Length: 107
Image 1 (cartoon, rainbow, N blue to C red):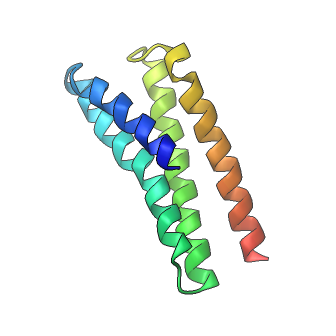
Image 2: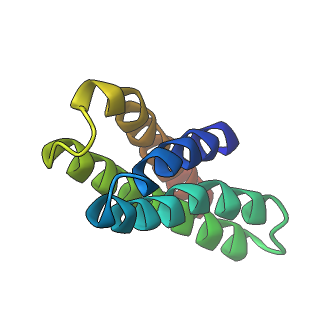
């Protein structure tokens, strides 16, 4: 999740210089894309199973939101789709992994 956040930061740095719409979308993407790893880190230091599940659930929601912003950037042709495809694929994988962790931790 740290490496994913790093790639998001680099993308947002480029977006920030491309005008108001790109800058606004970059802010949304930056917030959600870096929040995934931050919540995973918090979960690692959780005080209970409930807290662990809660933090991972938030991380999963943030990964889904990040996926939304990435798809929007591609659909609106702000960033070429092929440039975003690796990040979109990774976001999808993170959603799947985090969903599995949450489901298994609830059992």
